[in-house]
Each structure stands twice: as C-alpha cells, then as structure tokens.
Length: 298
Image 1 (cartoon, rainbow, N blue to C red):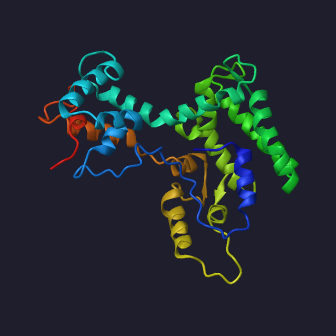
Image 2 (cartoon, one colour):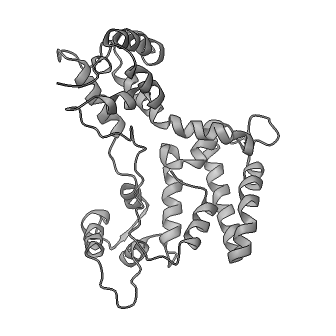
Image 3 (spheres, rainbow, N blue to C red):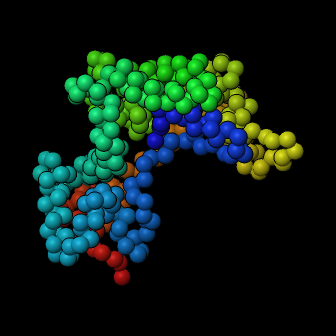
C-alpha cells in the first residue's frame, strides 16, 4: 500500500535516526491470503484466495455436501456472469476483486472523514484539509518542514488529478481508492514511477544513476563494513535493471523494476482451475469447484 506522501515523510523523519536498512521499492501484489500455500496439507489458502477471509470461514463450517451445493450457488451468483458454466476469465476477475476487497473496505470505513459535505464525492480541498491539517501541527512543531509539506501537498494533488479519471475534480470511491492505493491500478502506475524517480533523482536529470540507486537503499556509517547485499544490488542494477546498458534507469526501466511482470491472480486462477477440473478435459471450470468441498488432502 502507498500511504499519502506527507505520512511517508513524517514516518521517515521520525525513524531517520535508526540504522539504515535495505529499502524495498518494488510494489508487491496484495497477498491472496496470509496463510501458507500448501495444497499437500489443505486448501485453506485457495479457499481464502477464492472466497475472501469472511466467506472462507463460513465454508469451513459446512459439510462437504453443503459446501459443494453452496459453492455452486456462489459461482452462479457472483462469478459466472454469463451463466455458461465456464468461468475461466471471470475467475481471474473475481480473485482480483477479492484481493482488493479489504482496500475498498478501508476506504468505505473512512469515507465520511473525507466527504465532509456528504455529497458522495471527495474534492481535493476536502482531502487536503482533513489529511494535512491532521499532520501539520505535529510536523511543524517537531520539524518545521513547511516547504516539504507544501511540496508533498502539490505531489498529492497531482496524483489526485490522475486518479480523477472523469476530470470532474471530485473523487468517487473508486477514484479515491486509486489515489490512496495507486500501486493496485494500472492507470496509476506512471504516476508512481514519476514519484519514485523524483524521490531518488538527486541531480534532477530525470534518470536514476547507479549512485542514486545504491544511495536509496544504503547509507554507509563511519567505520561500517559494506554489507554483501549492497554489491549484489550493484550487480542487479547493471545486469537486470539497466536494460539498455546506458548506466542509468529511465522511466520504462524503473517501471519494470518496481512493478514486476508477475500476475499472481492469473497464476492462482490457473491453479484453481487445475484443482477443480479433475478430469482435465477443459480449460474452463465446471461448477461446483471441487477444492471448495475438500477440507484436507490425504
């Protein structure tokens, strides 16, 4: 999750006196489940990836016969939109929905904090007034970073405008979610890349040099021996990050670095299809899904 920029700044200043540790700029997908994925022992991970935590908990209380019946009803109602009993693409869309559900739930919980006038939309002024007035006093009292606060406010406003897809200068719940969690939305990735470069690009040339890349993940302390992983990061930069071998990272290379091309949703969907389609005769999933009816493998 990407926090609003001011909160990131306050956190960094407060923790700035601690020993530097390796940063992770890579944006990882929200986990499909906090459980271990071990189908040799149980399908609990698959249950949560497919149903979400709350629904999965309900299914564990059912008998195999009840869960088989209810899983069929569940698929018809929520996943098999065209009712053709084949849910290959729909399964991927559903898992993505489940993956993001807690994000939407969080926005829903705090919606009234932002939507002060109750019109069902959040303006930039409403968001700014709530968020920045909440932190300004604390930040100003301890660190007096007025210029930094203004900078972060302008950056947040720029991101807000990118999230505002219809350009009405108001954010509905989907748009506010994209603003607060841009790493989860394809149309927001460019602004995340831009923010990353601006944060790391010390000479302001629009690129990331090796020194800027290493300087972001490691700040040596006097007399400290350089950790082995720092040299490994140099190799990563030269061999993998810098694709055109010009000694610096451009926007495309930064995009490929911080957003790895691994579709965990598609992989889990393929896995569930394999588990459900026991006869292996179709690339699509017949209902009901067998893995929902199995509590534990023998």
